[in-house]
Length: 265
Ligand SMILES: NS(=O)(=O)c1ccc(C(=O)N[C@@H](c2ccccc2)c2cnnn2CC(=O)NCCCS)cc1
Ligand SMILES: [Zn+2]
Image 1 (spheres, rainbow, N blue to C red):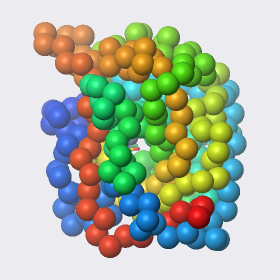
Image 2: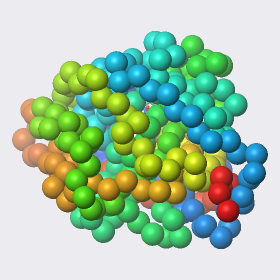
Image 3: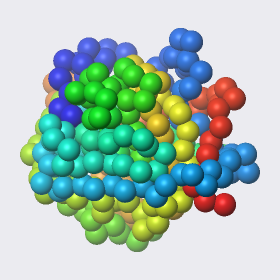
Image 4: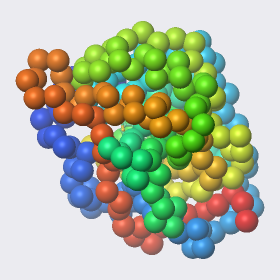
């Protein structure tokens, strides 16, 4: 999902644009949200998630001035997500993270108000119904995003290859080739236990196109690995004032009567 750089440029003027409009105009399914565990409803019809990713489709890392995106070639159905709450085939186009300046906060979603130091988003679009990402992102059932919470603990061996590449994309709009990375290594051991709800992109255009699938089990990364995320910059090499890329998360949004379903009791 190599998104035309122009979109990223167009939207940079509105720093800190993440906070963006607090709620999209007329939005009643905005993200992120606080997941109230006792209010979630067990749905026995939810199937296990069946991601099937081909590391060969990994292409590059791009610092787009809000996060760093690891992008995948999504011109074929080589890296797809099926099952869970999804009726169709969803193609992986990119993954990225949100994190804080300290380990005390950084995630976008919370579980019973509990914050995590960071959150991984794996972004997929509905390739049964749409021909490309840009179409799907405007449609109600266009996207599926897997959210995984990160906790500080032991070093994540699979993540290290990505961490080592980050200094090459320190500044906004920098891109570096990045291949043969298997995104499945970032998923927790148990992907059968998740919450799912209808929501939106958490950065502009905030479109209400996302089926969110939030993993109950977190992954662990080391303090030093997360510190490298914080060494990235929101700003481009030309700008004289450099701003650390931290706290790139959106404030929580009202549930507006939505039900959060769980795949587990
Ligand atoms: N945080 S999240 O998982 O909810 C999330 C997932 C995907 C996108 C996204 O793909 N947005 C791009 C887009 C391009 C075309 C139409 C609409 C949206 C865009 C807009 N300006 N830059 N981009 C590039 C981009 O990928 N931004 C994601 C930032 C990391 S949160 C945004 C948020
Ligand atoms: Zn995100």
